[in-house]
Image 1 (tube, helix red, strand yellow):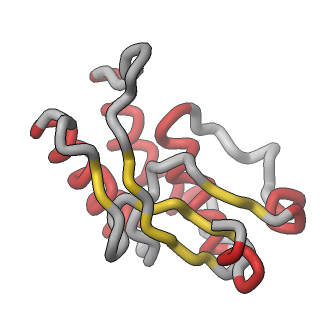
Image 2 (cartoon, rainbow, N blue to C red):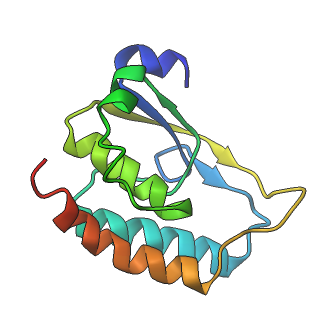
Amino acid sequence: MYQASENADVVIGSRYTKGGSLDKDWPVWRKMLSSFGNNYARTILGVHMKDLTGAFRIWKRPVVETFPWDRIRSNGYVFQVETAFLTERLGFKVVEVPIYFAERKYGQSKMNLRIQMEAAFRVWQLRAMYRDL
């Protein structure tokens, strides 16, 4: 990922780009939810990145300094979507590199119905919130 950052403003470790993968032990429902969520957000927002919800990223400082932090309202998974959307919207170069996403060994997922609903509705709000960019 670090090498890729030489030619990009943001590098995303992607489960869904060619060569990326998910742990074989991930439950089917989780794979489906993740895939659907990424496709849903990409379609609504018109974003070209394949993995909007992953948090494994390298950001160059100018990108982070350009973000309108006072306007960002998302938390959790949707925060990843919002920052990915802003990155493209602001014209920064993004490169996705394949990663293997392993099943967690400790702890539990924080994904719940409230987070899913926030994500489903927030992507529509993002289009309107950043129409001026």
